[in-house]
Length: 548
Image 1: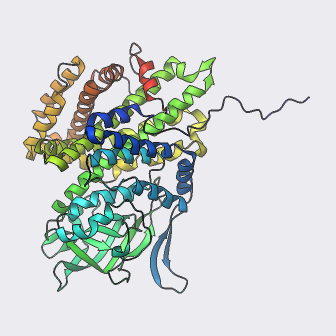
Image 2 (image 1 turned 120 degrees about the vertical axis):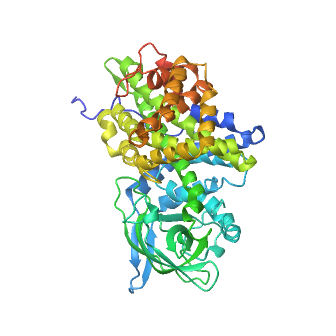
Image 3 (image 1 turned 180 degrees about the horizontal axis):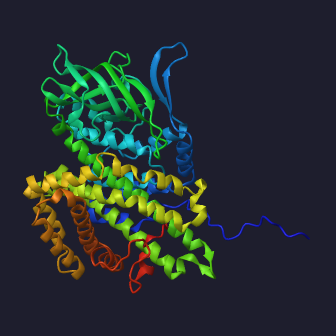
């Protein structure tokens, strides 16, 4: 009998049918650590239900379909009328429906709201990252709108609703609404003060007509947008609704959708305003100050999104190594592969732990008005945003390599993770913008540095490598002459010291020891898989394996 040439052996089963929340020890422990006892059980139950769905075959297929069927722009209807609509695959709507129903736009009005929402955003991002853009902006718009109490009273209940209600209709008729933003212009990029979009006041108080072009307008199918434009008194924040209260469409001329490296399921657009009706948010000339809390919230989401991508990359790599045999045994038991996996796991856990600490600080500011936590966030957010988002791409690339040629194939899902990985480092201010923001806080807000050092100092004396890194950081902070040219190095050190402090206090000893030895103690190479061989790497890898 002729032997079969198509017998399939030694192929890894898909990582499917598991609880993304409970299978992530660093995440589950972080929730327990920061959560109020009275809401912990409810939060666990909610997040486990979301985690089960995120790890299901159905949600994974939604993610694949949304990525493979990107949105389409319809500028005109069949008769030549301008409609400026974006069509999405049904999977996009299914993903958003589940996300909104899980409260991923509702952080501002419930106990531990930021922590619970952050953990959910982290979990659901692992099903598909692109649709996180409108979720993030809707969530982040709330504090900006509160600069105008009347606008907040009108819009906040819709933005924090757990009902997904797509379609372009007057917002008053909808059970829930989503927000986008349009800050960037082609001549200015991150320098929003160079914006040229003009805002002409109308007779009615707070109403304007906008004229100009937005180079990046994210999620143009949303119900409203926060934009910056030049009013008579200077740069000002405005709310632009897609549909006016009388049911007519606002002037919102979508010129094209961007053809992006990743983030394929999400629509990013160029938009023309030509007599576009808008409401002022905050005072004229204080647009940057009005949106500053929105910027901080979206930057935290960049940290969360990158941490989620790293976690999914590591989970896939460890799963593959646990089921793949090579050279006489399972890959996960090979010392060199174990070193690579442990190194990746350290990066992932450090990112997750830091992201949850930021969310807990947001809750403290929201619930008690804690000035110390507010000051901590002022430095910790741009520091974390700089470092965690920068680490995402090398982690995704190395994790892909752990799957070998299978990881380079689209069906594995790893190329989608890799293409998505640079996004959060660019969105809401790229690396240099974050580093310069850290310098600005250091030079102008001494209370922020005091809060940051107080947080780091909570682990002093627990690890000699951390203590040495803190000492070196203090020396560098004492000399800020010519600091701009070395800002990235300074912010990197701040991030690593902060991560080390958090892990020494909260992570298992094997994780904290390996992190401090490599990232702080210098016993590390320039590629993943170069950890000291004497460390307990097996425990680190076992902890990173997705179970549940």
